[in-house]
Length: 524
Image (cartoon, rainbow, N blue to C red):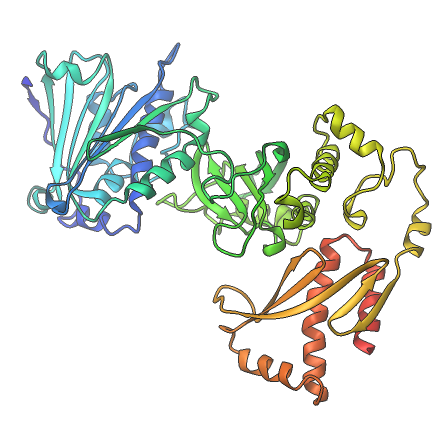
C-alpha cells in the first residue's frame, strides 16, 4: 500500500489488557464465530440489494504455533476509519447501538473484534474498505501493546495488487502466533451448526457462503440438519414448528414481550450421553447454547427430541450462554420451564417412540406412529397415512390425544377411566390393563444426576442407581437386604415408586389413578 496517514490515539487500557483478553474463557470456535458475526453485521448494513455474503476462512497451522495464522475475509460493507478505530481502541464501544439495525445485529453484546482475535493469537492485522479506493489498516499485538498501549491505524491508497483483496468492499482479519491449537473437526462442526440459519436463505437474503481452508484443504460449509450436530439427525417427517410468546416486567417497571420460534423433531436414536436430545438456543441466528436441557426434566425417555429455539434475550459477554440472572430468563423458566408442563405435549412422543419402533421404518407400527404423530400436530398426511389411521387403534392408547378409531364414537370420559385397571404382582412387576411392566435396576456412574433416575425402554422401566451419589453405599446395601429388613424394603419401594410415578405422569395417566396405584404399591 502506498501513501497514507497514521492516526495515533491511545485507548487508555493497561499494558496487559490484550493478554487478559486471551484468558477470557472463550473457546476457539466461539472466537471464530464472533469474527463471522462481525462480518454478518456488516453485511446487514448494506442499503438496497445485498450481495451474497462470502466469508473465507484460511487456517495455516503446523506443530509450530508461533508461525500459525488464521485469515478471515469477507465481501461485506467494510468499515470506515472511525469505525475501525473504535473496533481496535474502544473495547465494548461501537456505533452499533445507535444504528437503525441495532435490533438485528449479532455482535452488539459480544466480546468484539479484540476479544475474538486475542483469544486465538498474539498478533492482529485488520484491512478494511468501503469502496476499495481507500484501505484502512490496523495492526497491534500483545507484546507491542505492553509498551505502546495502542494500535497503529493507517489510511492508505491500495496498490493494484492490494485492490485484488476486495471486489468493492469488505474486511480481512489476520491473526498470527496462536495461543493454542485450532481443532479442524470442532471448527467444521460448529461452523455448520452455529450458522445453520444464515447458511440457508434467510430474512436478509440468500444463504451466506462460508468456506474453510485448513492447511490447503478447502471445503464449503453446508448447514447441518437438526440433530446432525449430535450425530442424531431428526426424521424429516417429524419436524414440527413451535411458537410461543414471552411477556415479562423489568425491574424498572417496563413491560416487554417477544415471540419465540423454532422447531422440534424426533431422531431414531436416543441414549444417555451429552448429545442425546436437547434444544439448541439461537439469538438472532447465531448459536448461543447447544443441547440445552433446562426446559424440561431430561431423561433417557426424552433423548430422541431435538429442537431449535430462537430466543432474542440478553447473553453473556462471551456469548457462551444466556444471562440467566435476567428478569427475562427467569420469566422464561417460570412460564416455559420444567415445572410449567408446556413441553409434555412434545416429550411424550419421544417416550412412545421406542427403539423397537424407531429402528424399523419398514414396519407398519413405525408408519402408524408417524401417521399419528403428524395427525396430532396437524401436519399434512399422505393417502397411505390416512389409510393407516382409518384402520383404527393407536400405537399406545394411554398416551394418545386422538380418538381410538376415526369411525368410532368417542366414549365418555368416565367410561374410559373405569377401564384403566392395574395389578401389582411384586415390587418389580405390575400390569395396567393388558400391558405388563418390568422394573430393572442397574448401577450407573453419572456425576451430573441424582441418586436414582428413570430410563424407560418400552415396557421395561430401568432404574439407574448412581454410584457417584453420596448415598450410593446406603442404596446398594438396601437392595441387598430388601427381603430381610423392613427399612431396606421401604427404601427400595420408595425409589421404585418414585420412578413409576414419573413414568405414569409421562404417559398422561390421571392424577387420581396415580394416587390409587401409589397407595396400593406402598401397601404391597
